[in-house]
Amino acid sequence: MAALRNRSGEFSAERDIIIAMDPLTPDEIARYQRHILLPEVGGAGQQKLKTARVLVIGAGGLGAPVLQYLAAAGVGTIGIADDDHVSLSNLQRQVIHDTGTIGELKTQSAADAIARLNPHVRVIRFEERFSTETAARHLAGFNLVVDGSDNFDTRYAAADAAELARLPLVSGAVGRFDGSVTTLKPYDVGADGTLNPRYRDLFPMPPPEGLIPACAETGIIGALTGVIGTLMAMEAIKLITGTGEPLIGRLLLYDGLAARFDTIRYRRKRARTAAE
Image (cartoon, rainbow, N blue to C red; front, top):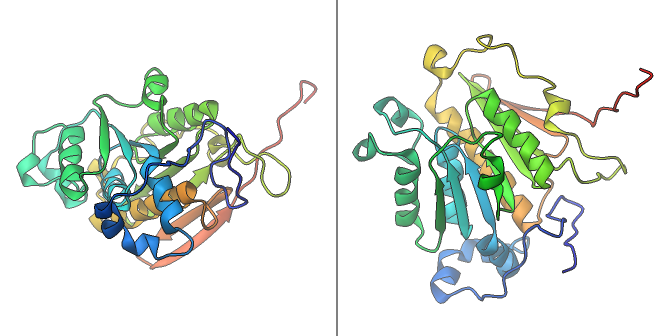
């Protein structure tokens, strides 16, 4: 099959998303009519969403809005990788869960919420943490990865595994009142003819253990995860439909207290030679 090409970063690898020939049902046309009215999306874009297979790592603060908006948008298959259970302290920010699901696996709670939101979405649950050891099993059959994990080990494992599998990756992070989002396709060439940057070009090494405390120690404003998670969902939708300019080579920063967005550009670092 011919590869798909789009200067804005739409899937281009042969194993990437294949446009479904399965027509939208009358219920789907009614459900997604606001998308279909957009010239940048239209019926063809909605079919791409219907055929897309997206793995979401984490069903917590970031994963919650990502899962909700991708399901609402009509992404046909969503994988959820998370080994945690819903707790009362999660509910201040993890809005896909509720009081009645306390004690349940987050994958189950999220899958049930998605079923209530959009019965056209198929959910695949992975009730284990994403890691280097589980990566091949988790990524198999997916077209796109969205990483909403809350620890550095998982973030680096996701970035490395997605690069190796030649899958686009949307990565987000939050802390107290600020957050960031970027999109990675390090296996593709950018407009300047050079390879797109890797996650490790932006963050070469994880910080020393204990240097950056978890939100359980420092706290986090709940709405912040909604801001960053929604931006992550938007990046995923842009990649799937091939519209707009993804955050490839750009790190979008959000300061919630100052109500300010900033962007940092980053590039692929030149590999060192043996002589150096």
